[in-house]
Image (cartoon, rainbow, N blue to C red; front, side, top):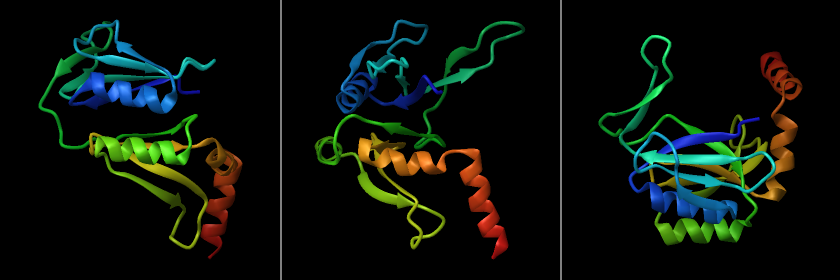
Length: 162
């Protein structure tokens, strides 16, 4: 179970407020060691959260036996990160929020090629540079059928049998 993730943003407050709208949850300043950070909670039983850090923030190992620390670096234009997140809103809400924000929001099917549709999702590009894959309640079962070791081994075996 992943309970929280962190993402960079040019405007952490605004991004947190938009994500809280999608999650129908809470957004507020992050009570932690990173100035300017905000946090979003889905208000679920798992404590699902997204910490939204100022874009130049990086996490680095602590010195010696110390905890990891936040540091500032030049912000990259995009990041090699994404997360698939279930949201309690419908497809129309995802699309309307993406359009309102001017953030690239597109519906796609995922699979090994365009002819094999395994599960669907929305690519929701926060500030047009950090991808969150959003799934609505009706999209989750298809993903769950594939997101386990047995299903992955079967897919690999079929692929290798060709």
